Length: 187
Image (cartoon, rainbow, N blue to C red):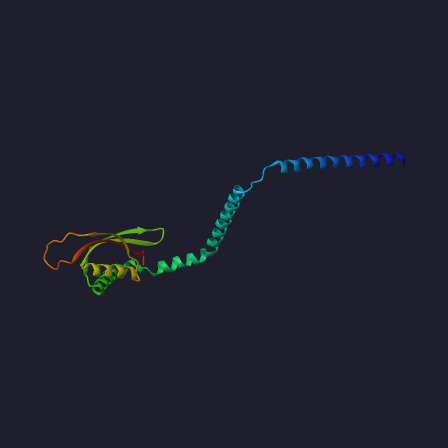
């Protein structure tokens, strides 16, 4: 029994020593934390702003991830509204002539079509060189008609084209257009 009491004292003494060592370690750690200088004033404000920016970026990324199915659906809807390549050329020419007629410019002379395949998207990009003639207001109306069209037209460049003869009204200008449109390939 005396032996049990001695063993018990040793276990208790060992536990107390462990607690004292743990207490000293925590005291050292606490001292180390208090000795670190915490940001104050402008530095603290900058860190808060930086954290807000990071949180805003994360929130924006999560919003984009949530909107991705809708965006994909909208892209597919857009691609399906493009004209098929099989009938697109005649539809574009017809529409350009209609827009020209409504805006009061001479129907455009489409000099060339330059198709370029976009196989990753199943599309065909078609570049067109064209010229139109009319007064300034009518040329602007023509460009507005292109912009409001149900078809997609990308006006890449406009340039005043030289007049072949100086006969005719003085306020008529000739404009060279470089346009692009897109068709569904394989349709």
